[in-house]
Image 1: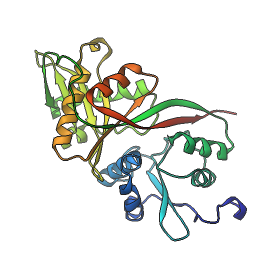
Image 2 (image 1 turned 90 degrees about the vertical axis):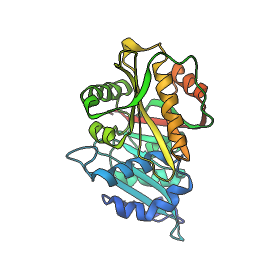
Image 3 (image 1 turned 135 degrees about the vertical axis):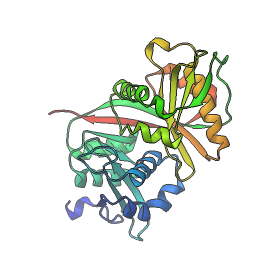
Length: 286
């Protein structure tokens, strides 16, 4: 990057595949606004737990941070190649500088103005893939009549079924971000809750990220297509949300697809309140 392209008050980006180096530098910055930095926090925590190849057996995760002239971190990102870049809270100059040093990525996810600055600085053609909204849980309220059945934590016996559901969810959202398919590990950690019908058959699921900096992010939520419209997803998300709050999570978060009015309305009835909008941009062939 040419000297005149770099804002004088910002240092160069530092990139690393060492998650401990990254977190040692960035933790105070990330913890100052854990909700807005939820993607970077939860991805880095997963890599801490499972190693650099947690998301792909051939490509290690990588991270980066940028400091101001006083040495304070002002921007962070995470990437799980071959997937795209996840931008933490940062100014547009930081996003533009990152685009010049990071190289080509298939997608970029973050706050709308930030990802657009990144994309424009890259000089590559791009388009909006998905518009998302980040929500934070307030007071939990049942969204409607509770369907028959009950919630229970998933067990090892459920893993084969859940592996299929996780894969179906990834296809449904188009893999716009890193999806943690280590289902057995999630189940062993107690991070997947099922809703079962009166016969004990699983009919819906909700998973969530490890708790880090006081925040937990719900994802994924999945009900097979032939079982939708019966209140199962609302019931299992309500139960998980309540239990996560009671377990001491300071913030319970989730993202919604703004193109899906059903899920957006459902989560607001449960007690989730909007925090901000994020955009998934994908780069296209020239």
